[in-house]
Length: 192
Image 1: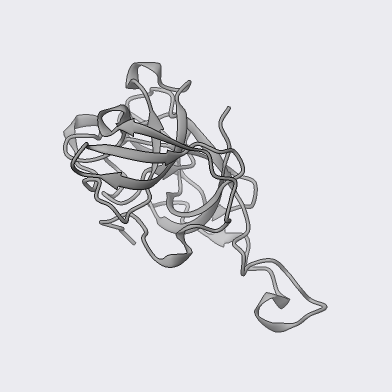
Image 2: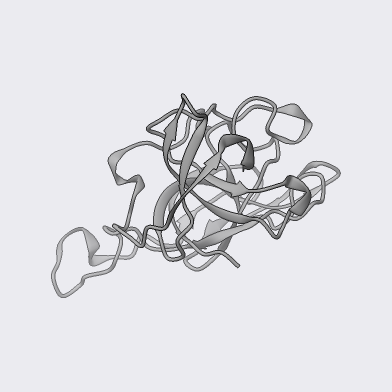
């Protein structure tokens, strides 16, 4: 699956908090928009109503960047409100890439597991609507900013005593150990 746009359905916000909004000029956020990927590839241009995960600050500070999730966008001022709160839970596209070699994906996860770390990845191997992968380094060998951990969605917790859809666990989620696969997953944001 190749998401050409960031996930926007109503369940993008998997928790009502915590919310710690901070305003940033869009130029401080990456990867977003045209020529924002390594090698000049494009991500979806920021518009109000989309909620991508982003790194904040200079790309030269890779690996040390603050990260967050865009809440709102004001096109007149080219400003975005970004939730930088730890513990915020969001649904996002995540690529199963574990490592790169020579600028290309080299290893992939056969499964996505609860608690796996995810990173902001500006490699051109990710689709225009996907900013997250399982790789701590991008395709150029530079550190990817840490974003958070894979976690259960609200409707994925096992509730055997109650019955219903949560009788059996849906995790781990199937990946592909030979190809890039982008899967819609729930991520808990953690800055470190």
